[in-house]
Length: 269
Image (cartoon, rainbow, N blue to C red; front, side, top):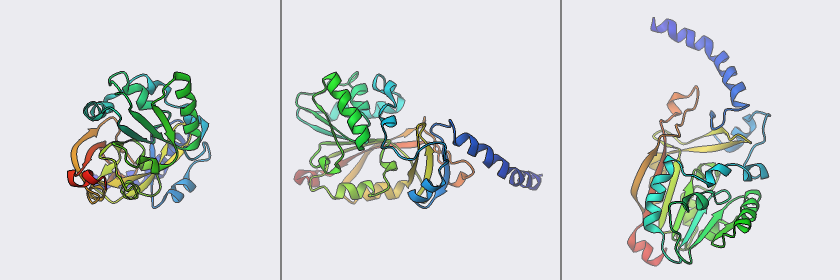
């Protein structure tokens, strides 16, 4: 009986793949498709129904509702930020959109005097964020497209962003900084126990490739820079289902809080 079912599944797979491809090409927001060796390969496979990439005004207008509320996966971030925010501190928000978390977290956190919240974004999204900050009079909210501006930051936040960067990897990015951020708050990371690969995601207004990281390799690379893991959590609202590739699928994304070792942090190496 099992062999009959296997034969039937194999016979139906081409039809199922075509059905999924039609859905993925249209309105399957957040869905993944395929296992690829590189961003280039994933980009070349993208359906023609939408553009590819994040650097567009359309993305700048996305997620307006998220500026007014937090979701379940935000609470670990809020928990640690409540402890870490200090007068005059600098928070570097890598891939922070138009300041989405700055606005939504303000409902739950008291931002201390002199704090700078610096959002790193692509030019089109950065422009939209700057315009919104001016409209709302948010002087402590700044924008940049230069990763080097993370130099000397107290807190480095990346919430669902590092996987969309083709290169360099996060550890390599941080290693280029003479004074590394002391605290890393990383949320919605696609981590699992298999080999790293690239997949393609439907991002509603566009398609974009992303890495899926090997958990041990990802953490070890940051540990080698002097960071130690202080906390981790599961983001169960974000499963990593790669259709037709069960061996590359994973049950949830992850969050990590890592802190620079005290001896390293003392010199901000």
